[in-house]
Image 1: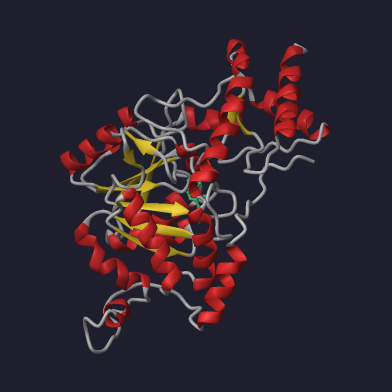
Image 2 (image 1 turned 180 degrees about the vertical axis):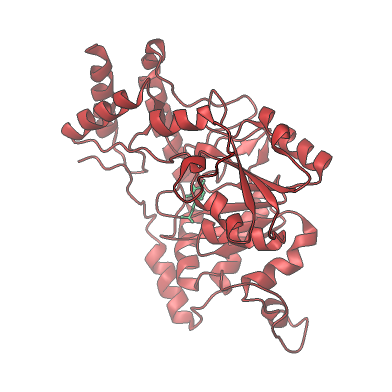
Amino acid sequence: MIPFNKPYLSGKETIYISQAVASGKISGNGDFTMKCQYFFESKYHFKKCLLTTSCTDALEMAAILISISEGDEVIVPSYTFVSSALAFVREGARIVFADSEKNNPNIDVSKLETLITHKTKAIVVVHYAGVACDMDAVMELSRKHNLYIIEDAAQAIDSYYKNRPLGSIGHLSTFSFHETKNIISGEGGMLAINDERLIPRSEIIWEKGTNRASFFRGEINKYGWVDTGSSFLPSEVTAAFLYAQLECLDAIQAKRKAIWNTYNKGLQLLKTKGVGLPFIPDYATNNAHMFYLVLRSEEERSVLIKYLKKVKVQAVFHYLSLHKSDYYLKKNQSELPQSDLYTKHLLRLPFYYELSKEDQESIIVHILNFFNNE
Ligand SMILES: *Cc1c(COP(=O)(O)O)cnc(C)c1O
């Protein structure tokens, strides 16, 4: 079976983990954590970075940091992972779900303003497949209505909007190093804080509501409980793994882009049949996080999944419109047709660093055959 995903190891992960273990400091916020954070702050100009145990955790930190409370409204795309909404629900927010664009699954920015009320506190944008949302338009809404912008950049490492790194534009942004992402640490994530006003509190929330980070820098002579928070930081074992990956980021990205381009070239013909391929707007770059098809019907998707399974190719779909989830069914939620369309029609193809040329060619041939038989 050609699997859908296979975590890639650069080779140095266990060496760095051994170093972390040998150092005697294996809890959080040690050398490897700081090296990873510095990597992001210097390469992508995020003002301040804090590693977390997941992107979900980073989103929860974001919700606490912007002081979400009962009655606040947060606008979130419906076509996304649960955590993009759940983190804010936990702090008492009411989620107002937004629809996706016609030509790609990103939030439809042109329809956002009608969703803003006097209760709106933040907009969460998700750079789906690592492709940028239209951030100039989003930041314009932020200024006009005094809203926080949170970039859920879980899939968007090393991707750009008009030459600006994704994750550097919103007030806060969150990344994932889950094993299905480009850069991994098993479970793992990061919060980037670009609004300087939020930096001091971010470290406190990260360290269980204490000013411990400040104490270890020698800025205060004792530390204690000063705010809300939780244990959001990963151990040095996780950070050591992550650092080994970051050292190979350019090679990983180059290989993934080659795989993406092979799919894109090999499957162009499908467009003439009305099957959608990923769309990258002029203002965005492609970080080769995933390759997907948008099929013509839900039924066609099911048949194709079965067909591929028979020839030993695992293709999967994801995201069921959150506005229709059992947990969040709200009577007055309006219809979001594009979100529902991606829910039913989008299919992800196998995508991982070690996907061989032969395997990829066979996947492409099988898919072309499937459509040629019509
Ligand atoms: C993967 C993902 C998450 C969750 O990341 P975890 O690190 O598993 O918590 C959140 N949002 C999006 C858009 C994702 O793709």
